Image (cartoon, rainbow, N blue to C red; front, side, top):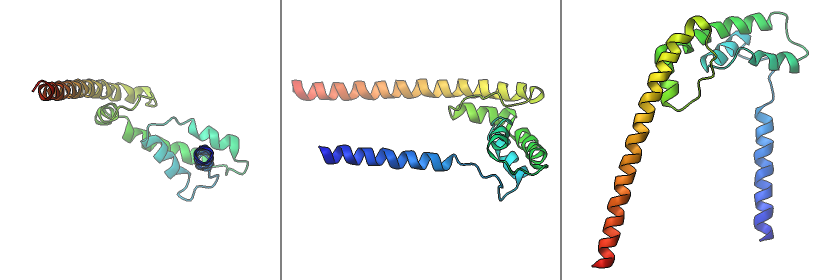
Length: 146
């Protein structure tokens, strides 16, 4: 029993160590600030992500923020459209409202439609699961009663 507890504790420590290493910030990204900003925008994250770098990196270049924002602008444009709204919602991801007002309406319409499709698919899945469970229960009952 003690070995199981020790193994569980060791596993949690390793997971904890892994989590802390993935959150460290690269204050000089190899791909450049514009590419990093574009990636953040394409993921639908907030432009405020750059604030983490400002707060953690003392040696930021003078152009880092403007390059990040330029890349972010391109990335968020590719993210904030109807089709991507459908995709995000159908995958069950939250709407982070990262889209600028001028692009938000199209994204939100797609998101609403994607949610409706997802909910309908989940209802169908539940009905199928319920029917399968009923068939299984009936066959088990039939086997018992003989």
